Image 1 (cartoon, helix red, strand yellow):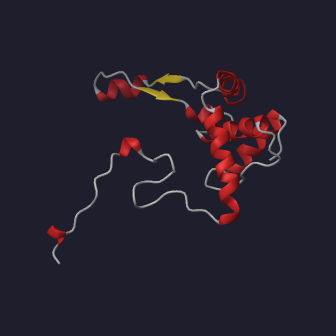
Image 2: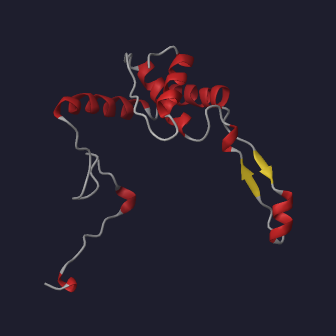
Length: 145
């Protein structure tokens, strides 16, 4: 069999994942049976909450007051001059409380858990210590992490 006879399915990357969390025939949400129901509950809670203006307002307020969003721009005058004229600005993500973008996710998780009265939040350790951000977010929101 030569490579010309093999075909790769074409996927529309803008419609993925589908409503079942699948990425075409090659992936999706495969979890242990004991986690399937809680994951379905979480998905339902997220779908019900994500477009709620009250939730979005609280999240925006927490991102501003606790995390420090939006972050400022810094005009890199010397770099602009050295590169020949295009004005170069640097977005100061390093100025966020706990750093970078992971605080966004942690605050969202904590607010969702608070709203749905969940006792615990996911705490998986990754590079950047997501769990510590989640714990700080939960403390600010009076949730448990």
